[in-house]
Image (cartoon, rainbow, N blue to C red; front, side):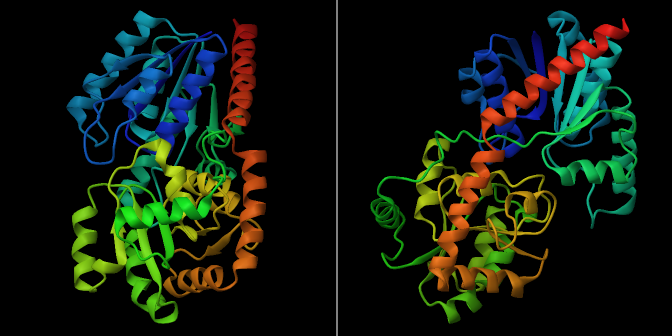
Length: 392
């Protein structure tokens, strides 16, 4: 099968890792895979090297931009049509909102036999200005009429689209975003890794490390962790906050650290190579993702596979990864007191935290590996192709 994936940007993020891993797995399974994406820029990091190593044929579309830019968007639509006409794919699989809307329209109008879109996160969400919210819903309704099936990485994504009447009558499958379990696993000597990273970043050898792995962005919740940090330190004097990642929000976070006089209690690593992320997860006493908008919480899965206890806000699909008091702890969105209580509970009751971590790893291995994802995608591709062939 000739497969074409389209995604807005190949920055370091969950949807992008999902797409690159899908492309690599499909190449291994004997498919011809093409990957189209827009320019990569900014401090979040790039997955272009990993995409090049996947075996997929890469196509950078200069007019593909994340922001709503009418002139670029029209140019991108026609550029995608030309590219699709040249490649002649059997399947176009789109990812992310901008690429999903333009890519589906372009593929449909070029009469691609099978068109599929994955919902990695919601372009519309509570708290958005109402006109913008309704505009995204309207755009997704139109785009859904130009594909043959939809995929949600969690049940929550499916339910959110269905609640807005998006994709009525279409097959809508749940296929979790897969993580490479051979890369994310408990390290042989966790304590040695912990002390090595503490020395590297000047963190006290006996610190209790609260960690977050995410791009630095207002929606990821690093601000909330900073706000509760002084109170946490009063209860647990050895607490240290470790932020792994980078992003446009870094300067704002650093100013807030200074205002709270917490500079010595917080470490921002900047960009970290993907292969080193398991070491950082091993160094954490607990991994916290207080995100305000999340399709699945990929870094929570990675932490679980590494045997690290996890905490998250109960938003989007996080509750399907971090099942409260079973595979992790959940706090209501924006509830700083509940978030702090969950962290203290993990740090105080290490036996309880270890039980949750063990259950989390088993849950991740069963539901969230790249092998599970690839098998479900292959089955869905074959089903869509056969269904469309029978109608011709």
